Image (cartoon, rainbow, N blue to C red; front, side, top):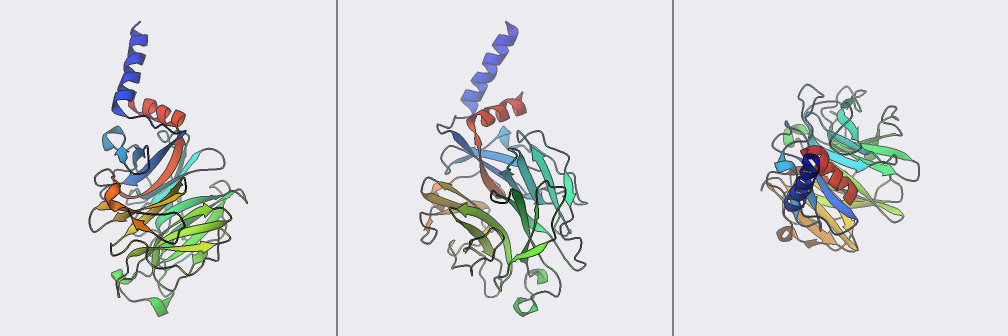
Length: 314
């Protein structure tokens, strides 16, 4: 009887603490706080507009790799194997990124350091990595921003501590063996925080123009017929006059939502579009956990959501 009572109490706590989404999937948001030293945070949403932190906004995974042991800019996707795969920034100045996988978002594999830029002697950093699963070739593309001293000097404004980033990538089928690192896009300006979504038979890249003089600091969009490019010249800013970074995007029905970190204002904003051309600022309609920084949106099933709550809390 005690066990039955305890299980009923658990279900009651779940139902009163977390509202249950009505759709067949739950929108999830992984993010970091402060400098990323305490690790991975999770939030959920019923509608893509109101986001609520899980587990009292406590970290569900502490970083262990790299000398700095940070977990900034986490990106989680569901892979072709059904598992959740995550990459993140491990340090402000390192030649690699972090990687781990999970089946439930709570129990994670041993964290690995992926030395994706170890071959570049003059590389300064490896920031904001992302993963996209290539359904056509059954492989993953992992991409990130790096500055290599002496590269792209014609567009080096010597601003931002002389960082002059470009987006690089590698591919893998198992996160054990990786192909040679290559340049993914060259827009003729410093670029960070790229994220790619598939839109029917094309790919959409949302990226940050990092130019400081004259100031840009905005999110733009580029397109390609192939996941690994070539990508079109990025269009105009879709985020207006905000200093924006860390875009993450998803499509709900016919509406594209792009969330971004208004990092100088310490809060999140968003824009929406039905055609990826005309954008509307909906920042006043979205809410995120206080202190959330540069995260990624993805989806899980209702069953996975319930298991996530049960596994973590009890």
